[in-house]
Image 1 (spheres, one colour):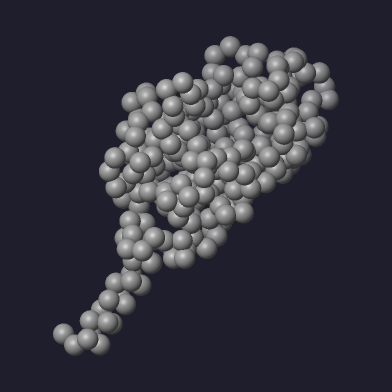
Image 2 (cartoon, rainbow, N blue to C red):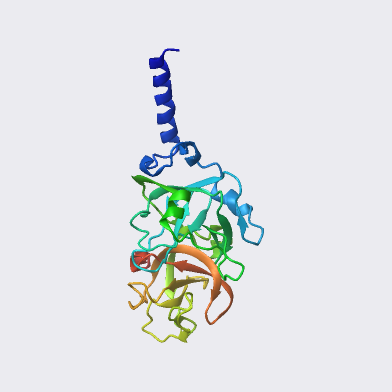
Length: 284
């Protein structure tokens, strides 16, 4: 084959590789590692590898997904979530202002070799192995060097739509996914709590109406099934009043303890107060 022919063939392979990798930003790729970017395991498969304890990935495993959360309003802190068409995961980035390099709708690939994987609040987490004395299920990456070593993002942005689901249909395998629960209303039986208890900086207190978003709030649908929301006291909308009318709530699904409530419950972590909207179907 002539040198011109070889050059054309080589160019074809490069273009094909770029298309397979979902147009990832080539400016962030280490030399000679572009072929790694095509995911070879989906997030549901990765979750099945978890047997109850955090584990490390030693093989050249790559997962991918679309960013579904944002830390812009402060309810997510040093983490962001991704989803593919099989499941979801939380990336323990360990840095602030993640909505700039990893905006909602951004496609990313994660090189898992050397990473730790575990489950916290029902959500599959990807980061670094925690120290033996740590309370973290999975530790943060903490530095941009580590992030760039393991995470590659694309320039293109795709639309992100939540999965609409009824309270009774929620299951743990959906945790980490952006979901919307429709037709729910604030519970006012004194069970709801305020203050930032998930981050451990304050103790919970019983709430009286008007309820504020900070802390946990309980919502129920027409069948009496409940879903809880969690809002950090550092979120920009923490001091906003919770609507008392019928509404639809969108957020990243979690499963875990709720202050003042026995057992573990499903929790929605909203990205902003825009994730709670009026349900107009009640008036139809």
